[in-house]
Length: 194
Image (cartoon, rainbow, N blue to C red; front, side, top):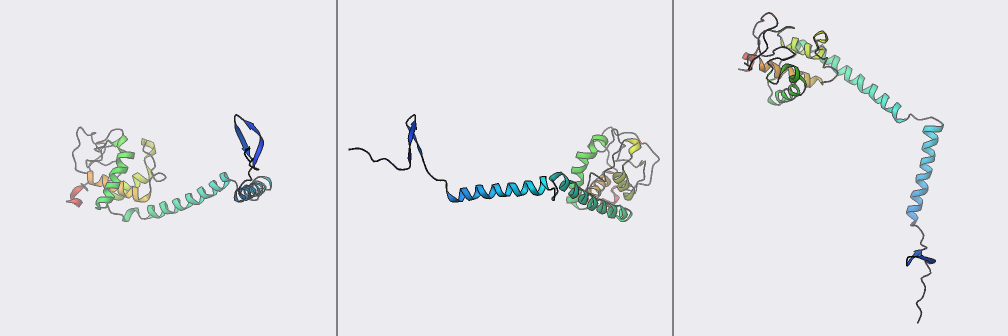
């Protein structure tokens, strides 16, 4: 008795394996056709006719909008610097400490006793001891002394948080602090937090 041949099997075989002559699923064929049509339209629209912007141009436009938003927020923040007070919120101070350890400690030490940058724990402040003065120094930096301008790097809430954290360090006594670098100002430190 001979086996009946499957009509879908092709006549040739390799290593005992016969090819099955089976049609592709219709959804797969339509997906392939639609993908090909989409690719053709995309190529014509963006690369041949140049009607739409390519990714690099889109990115540049978005970056410009983002810079405008950031500049407006910083300008608004800088306009209110004189009216800001140090925060006493534990969460804000925690954020300030995190920012300080990451951005400020390399120059001011983790205990703020001063390294390349000045000691932030004493009452000898080079650029003013008021909270607004501290904010201005953080925002604008002191380029002639090597301190970065942080306004393009830190967000306004991070600037206020780190300034508030630094404000809590006044009057602390770090081990082996950097000597005073300016005239003593009126103590403005921890009394606010007591």
